[in-house]
Image 1 (cartoon, helix red, strand yellow):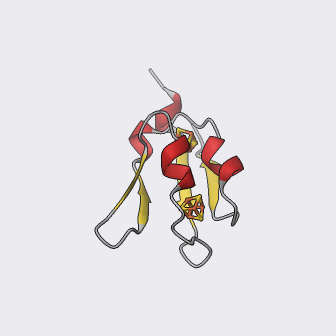
Image 2: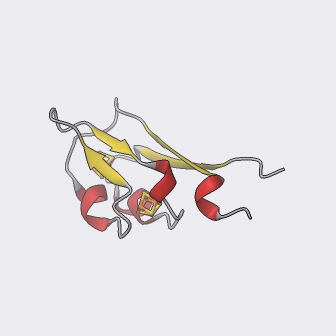
Length: 70
Ligand code: SF4
Ligand code: SF4
C-alpha cells in the first residue's frame, strides 16, 4: 500500500538556511533534525507533507516534491 511518506521528498537549500531552527520546532513528526554543526537535514520517511516547515521558514529554504507514485 502506498502512503504519503513514500511519495514526498524534501529539499533544503543550505545556501539560504540561516539555521534559525524554526522548522525544527514546528515539525510535529520530528522529520527534521540537525547535525553537530547545526546543519539541518530531513528524514523523508517521517515527513507527512504538511508544509508547516515551508510556511515558517523565513528564508524560503525548504521545498517539497511529490514523487511520481506510478
Ligand atoms: S512538511 Fe511537515 S512533516 Fe514534513 S518536515 Fe515539514 S513540518 Fe515536518
Ligand atoms: S526555518 Fe529555514 S532558515 Fe530556519 S533552520 Fe529551517 S530551513 Fe533554515
